[in-house]
Length: 257
Image (cartoon, rainbow, N blue to C red; front, side, top):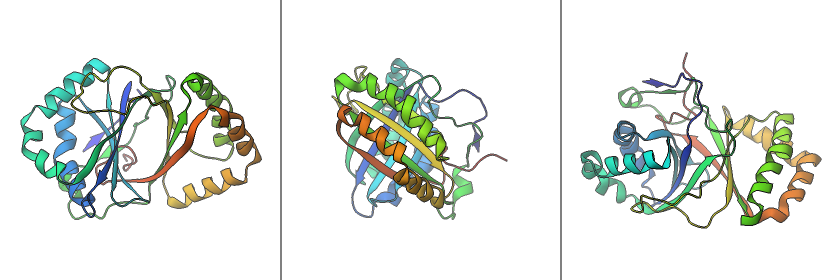
């Protein structure tokens, strides 16, 4: 197993990858991914942060991976996608996908807003054989689309006004990211261009905790007022995703004893 024990947050560069899959193909891709692509990517220098089922869209697979820098990203991707492991399994993986180009390139919104993986555990592939997926953990992924000229203002307002409201209703502190505008120097794998986003990820250990959080937010007048104050900075309505980790996801996985 892999246990993340260090205090440092992960990672300076993050990809949020959302795949549209052929009907019924998600479990096939998850089996391939969890068995072959976790260690294979990490050996190439890619941090596999977490992989998830979308609870509300059965043909969606969502995952995060991280890198130490854009230069490290270019090298690691070239090593993995040019290597024998991907060559062996790429046809089977690609056969499950309709679209794999829905990718946001991100960076932490502040030095303290990256993924905290401390104490999270990834079991070995062999330890998950025969296990049912899911232990009640659910992630709330929120994507806020922001006008280019208002990106910095939105981020500062979000941290100053929205973060305290989340804390006030007892929500877990979110990891928070904004668009990384560096040139995608590995064009073999496209990323979405022209986006300005602020992305948050909150981890709930039970579905009921997320339900209570949503109810508290909906009833909170301060939350509604804060939303109204930043509405003019949005380029379109935000998107929300409820995600459950696969058996080998580090983010959202079991905590180390």
